[in-house]
Structure formats: C-alpha cells, structure tokens
Amino acid sequence: MYGLDSTSGTLMASSDRITWQTRSTIDAYDVPVDPSRPDTLLATTDQGILRSTDGGRTWAPAGGPPALLLHWSPRELVAITKDNTLMRSVDAAATWSPTAGRAPAAPAALTPA
Image (cartoon, rainbow, N blue to C red; front, side):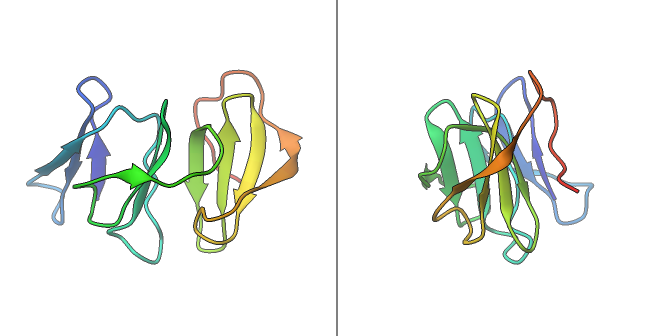
C-alpha cells in the first residue's frame, strides 16, 4: 500500500498498513500503481508523467500527456489531461491515444466504468 501526503509530498509505503516507510518526496497530483507490478508507479506532476520502477524511491520522465489524474486497470491506463481531455494507453504509458470523451471542469477523481 502506498500513501501520498498532499501537504509535504512525502510518498510512503506499507506492507502491513501499520508501519510506514518514507520512499521519496514528490509534488504529484496522482500516483497510481501498476496492477500487475506493485513496484511500478506513475505520478502526474507539473513536469509531466513520472515513472518509478522501485516502489517510489526514484522517478524518471515517462512521457505522455500533461495529465492530472490517472486510473490504471489491468487492461489500460486512462488519463484526464490538464485541458480535461480523456486519453488512454494500452501499453503501460508508452503510447497514448485520445478518446471521444472530455471530463467536466475541475475533476477531483477518476474511475472509468
């Protein structure tokens, strides 16, 4: 389990939900976890999407749209970009394509159905 303190930007991890380990500090809007690889995370930031493959200890640019929110299901990633466009990736954020939809103004969460 991962937790992000939105005030300090501290990313923490816990295997027992009782004790927590600080992994890094990141100014992120959203931090989804790859459903098939729990040490792989993405973070939406003002600098673009970042990727961690070591459980949030280090981060590198992942490319992709300037996103605010991401939802990572076993089949795809869905993003809401800064201009409220909905994008999707079926290859773990390597490539993105627009969808026909747009998000309402100022979305606070994303869960595709």
